[in-house]
Length: 117
Image 1 (cartoon, rainbow, N blue to C red):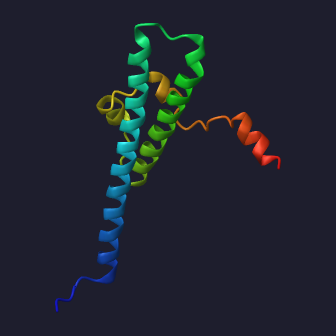
Image 2: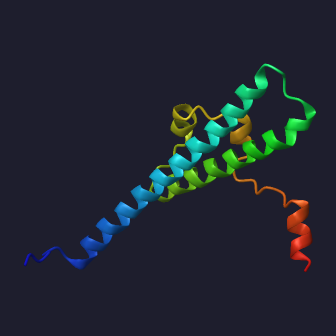
Image 3: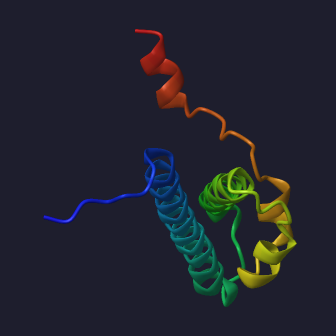
């Protein structure tokens, strides 16, 4: 039977760093997925032009990507990585997504009516 001879604080620190790395990876993948959905939407509507009827759907995708970006930036900052310019370049984050980062999406009509019950 092998016994870990490191002090408990070192073991705890190692576990915390592992969880931070795991969370950072999850947040990065979530951002990638949100940006991919937005790019796919734009590509699908590029030939026809973005009709007024698709604007709410696109705005929702932008807001979701902005939220994912916010979560990723916050997670990075929690680990001590303060410069987010690297994220913007690496993930090619559109300016409109950067501008809505951290904004909470407005509740839908359904959310407002459900909360009144």
